[in-house]
Length: 117
Image (cartoon, rainbow, N blue to C red):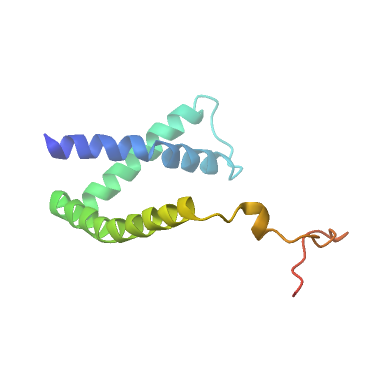
């Protein structure tokens, strides 16, 4: 039951990836039949990706669990750094205006250009 919930969560998280893949497929400029619209391409791309994923993994549950553990290894330290940094910022009297230069460099006519101080 938990694995089904994880799979459904992964599908909903990757819905935009599948949609953008289908849009990229239509942007190739291929002459496709009129009935083959975006929604059909999205479904075909999703089914093809799911089939490729299932075919390439012999034990999908343990591989996905290992992937989630690898992700969890960096999330806790990263979250600790972010929370401590926010805590230090809340105690600081420095504002964003203090960090900005008093007279910004005038814009370049050719666009943003890096200039050494």
